[in-house]
Length: 404
Ligand SMILES: *Cc1c(COP(=O)(O)O)cnc(C)c1O
Image (cartoon, rainbow, N blue to C red; front, side):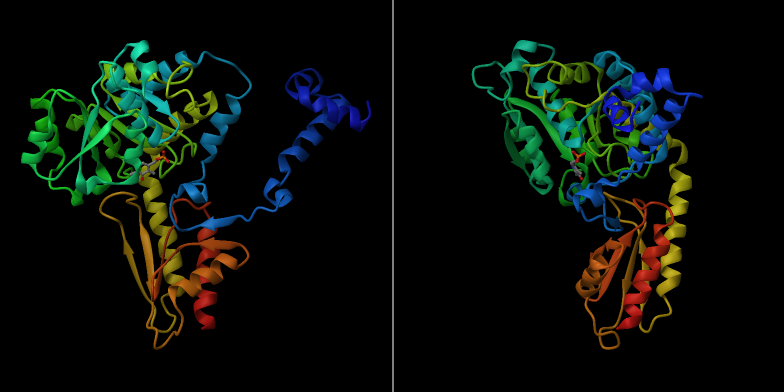
């Protein structure tokens, strides 16, 4: 068999590999080709700039990196088939158990969880109703979702996708007045808790009194680990989580968890069912399993990882703290993306350079490093780096600040 023929045969590699692997020369060659293929550097081949992400889990920067356990789950599940609904049932049951929810389902991101959750609230278990979404008029479905003005973040678009009208309130009195027989749901954006007058318990109290389902978006609110179950325990009917932030599951995964009947209703609008608003929110089996492994691992090792992130931060801090006028500060945001951050600031009279200039120099360096910049400071996180990259980041920041 010539090399060219072998290459052609690569399209049937799983089968050929099964038959030909082992001692034979052909098997050895196939293995060699397969491993060459694995080493193919597509970023280089396509001329795509890569960088160390010390900035944040931002979708436009491809979010976070999956850990080896997650990649292993993806690889090991990629050679077999299963029924998608059975997989969602069983993985959902496991995630629900881990997170103190009655039920859960894997979605294509937190946005998708919010949209599917809303769809389920509107349609209940009726596939005919689900097929009508987002055209609610004359459908018999409710049409309004209440949100606090202070919780106005762009992601409420996920609810609007279902055709609902957003009703904005500020005070408890306005909330009570806004509730009527068209009210489908009361939503809460956790990251904006401090910008709204009404907090979780009061929101839930009013909702329960009026028998209205509640949904909370906690997309970027893990860690702390206990936030995985805190809002289920509190009594929110639907909880929406991103899989691709600090949990470092697949970037296009998320979780919708909560009350059993509402999760079942949400799945009426979800893939594989076809004539629904959620059909495009498909999640493949590998990512469903990858997310399960990521959540399970995060619960088991999150604390250990937190300590490792602090060590990485300390390494960078130590590298720069003796540079003239440099001050460092370690902080954890109170809410949303609550991981250790390092701020490095300096006196511009002594180091005449702006944060933005340092940011640009690091971005254009080799390897490129992306982080946040202020007027006389830069700030960074380490939790989404490949372990070890903190050494490169420390050396590069030291180099650039020392040059000024
Ligand atoms: C990131 C984020 C989302 C969207 O999450 P995806 O998993 O990317 O869909 C929604 N809400 C908030 C508050 C977020 O931070």
